[in-house]
Length: 464
Image (tube, rainbow, N blue to C red; front, side, top):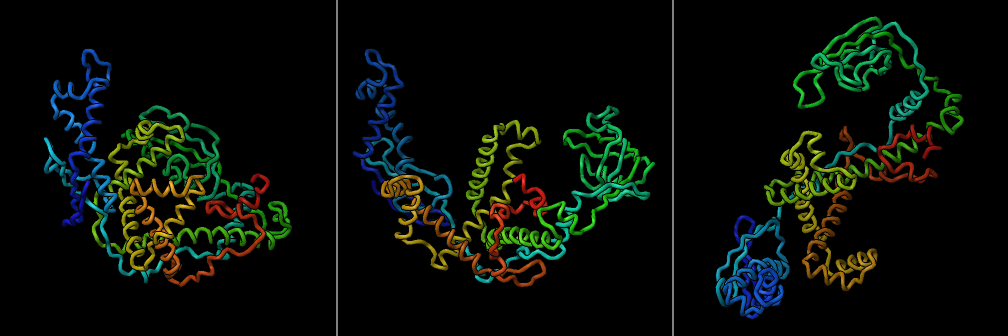
């Protein structure tokens, strides 16, 4: 097989392939063997009819056509691997010779990954949350802990967020009582956002002895008629926090004094905030880099990324035992709306991919063959494979270039996060030393999760 590649306009190339008659003859033989398994001929078991009889009955062109359908994609794939063509879409194949006899010659026009410009990457400023917690942050954590020990006391005033109100509530829809929305002496925290937002809106400013009636949009998008609510406010109580003193600290935590508790919160919150800031450096740097790409990105790459994200989404649902059709029906979305939800992040991911390749090229970060082989050895060791065989398979399936690109993008992202200027939400510079986790005796597992509440950790350590 001979092949060559010609660069065309509009980010396309033409892969021209010629397969000599003897090589294609093997594909025709294989085609007739497949046909023999499907065609019944008197006196022969399935798959055993000789080719000459099949040709006599069906014509020689049947086997040739079958071979063309089956073998052309393989010939094309081999040419793409040979010339290291970075294709991003399906090819348009045109047979130019050999459909009836002689060598097979065809052209495949295909779109390839473009090269973009991300000029200015070496002067990016990236905003991240300041790693060091403020005194207000620590005070909020202490207040959250105190809130767990708060006592509710009746007050003679209108309700506000954070207050607890005792209510009789009746919820109906089209005149019918709605299960779960009708009860008496119900304790409700104003501002909690439970059930529907309109409840909070109408309870703010309401006093004991007051009745409120209102409508609320039905949470089911298929229901046109609103919900009707009637609420009688019977009592308003406010949460009274315990005094912030050593006695409370000893009761609420493992520490004897507020000073010790506060120091522990500073340590925990600092570690958590540093973890969040480090993650933000990478994410925000990538987003800022993508913003430098002014070129149009190919629809084929965006659609490919959307499909990959949908497949990942479906896979995660299946792991949880959920059916994708039932799930989509339950939340009222279609395959088209699901794809639309993924479109914006997919385009962003494509821009990041192309921009990181640009940075890798500009900063000479593309790994050489030695670095590539070293990575393959590491992959083989981790998976218990032979490194030589693994590299051979990667080369056979054209994956070496993809692996090299992935390593280059990883290096580019590391270079970027090491070189962007870091600022906080007020534009003040953040020194990278602030992103270094201080050495403490705190269990690392207790500070590596950004969503954990340091206050909750302090009061529930026995449950960890």
